[in-house]
Image (cartoon, rainbow, N blue to C red; front, side, top):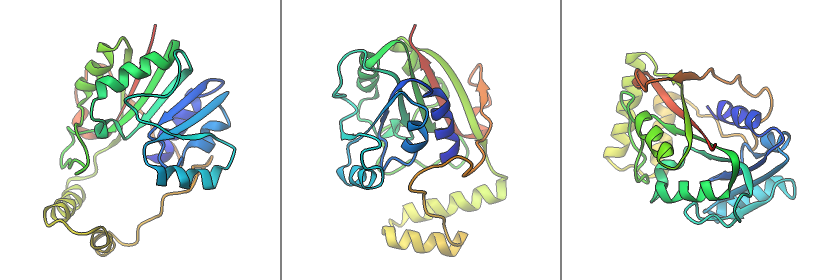
Length: 231
């Protein structure tokens, strides 16, 4: 999933001035930096930014920012990216107003989010609001974007899906500590893989995206991708 989103972002970043909001420690910044004309990463969490700066040094500027008040002038970027973070925003509407302000004519926002309509979906305890495919389309359309929606990662077979969902529900329900959750995951699913410091070429094959023309049949996919274009 990580490689899919950042390979798509890298393709769209070719020759453009790009801002990634909620970049975290910047796992995809290196891949995008090789294609973009200019790239800036921003996040609200200073510890995550410190991790990113420790890895990238001066290769990519990383700044602390609030997605509701982007610290850039009008028409500063061609592409704004927000991956798996729209559901943490207090006011997504304000964020999109800011995105429209900092984008140039024909600018693009690329957004991906967990699909709340899939079976067994469980929201993050830190989230504010998740959006369906139709709600994402409406959110972007209201702010003047022409929208393309895609879906990816079909839901797993029922038995495996239900066992994993039940395990997540149990961990959330009994409020396990982070260490206890990690132990439970190792017992149930085996050793987990660490996130890479930086996504690289060939690390994993990017998944195919399925275009959504009428927002139907979305429940069978795990992830939604929205591409909004200004005219």
